[in-house]
Image 1: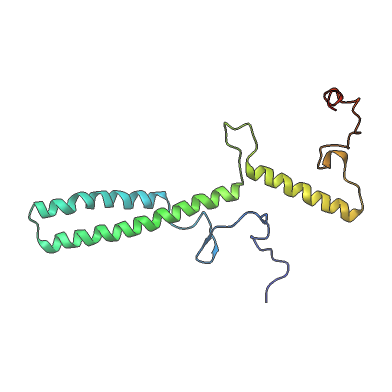
Image 2: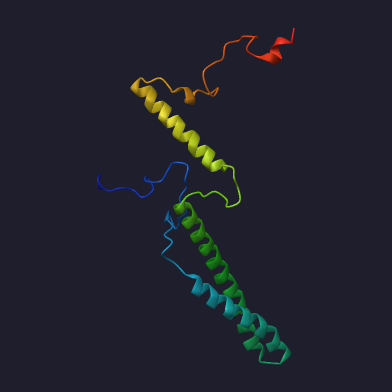
Length: 160
């Protein structure tokens, strides 16, 4: 039986923000292999990639060359899996930190526009539930309707 007072970490996130999952649970950026492990794997892989063909040129035992070749293949697999895991960690950290505006952009991002639209919609629905009228700045036209008077608009005076 679940505890009704316990909070689910996925409930605290906004609905438009997805969690990065690893093995069926949200990915924790504090767990798993780190960058040091990845660097060690890459250095061993680089050494083996150089030594394996040289072992054939230096006429080492064919069994040793085969072992080196299988070690290269195994390290390629492990290094590839580690890089995928580290990329997921970066994605989890960025999602946890939220969206940020690009440094050189004066305009809002699509995500910021969507978030603002969601906030306005939720404020309107909360106001409608309370029976309030929307403020003039919330109107979709940008303000109250202007009277249709040709005298007020000089450009329309000249038109037939």
